[in-house]
Image (tube, rainbow, N blue to C red; front, side, top):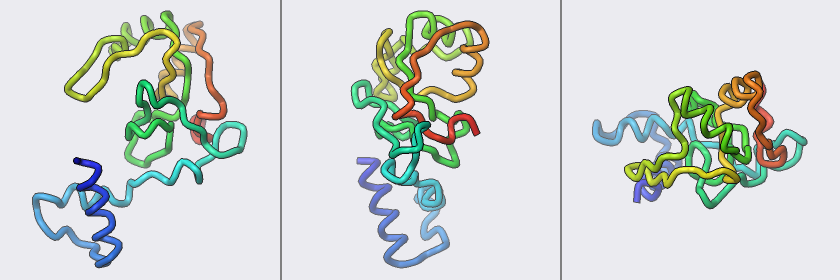
Length: 147
């Protein structure tokens, strides 16, 4: 339902060319139009090719599209597609981000070792410095991950 509303606002913005918010209730949604992701088919992976999906089960990505797409408003930069390990899940929980536990309010069932997930670039770098091994999926990791 939310995607439908957002898409409707986007296309009405394109159709009518409005640069101003038309109502206070939808003002935030209308201002977020500039942060729509580039199509994953336009974004590049670490190998220089087309960005491939990371995971549809569980559904990953900052926008839950299945892709580690770049978005200007993604402060965490969820751009690295990795197969998570038990060691990584334990490490990130100690850092304050428990990815094993479900958060049904957001439709998140929790991760298990072997799941692929779009991870924050900085967390991956931290984990690697701490000696935590991760399998990074180059074809599904965004080329902007290490920028």
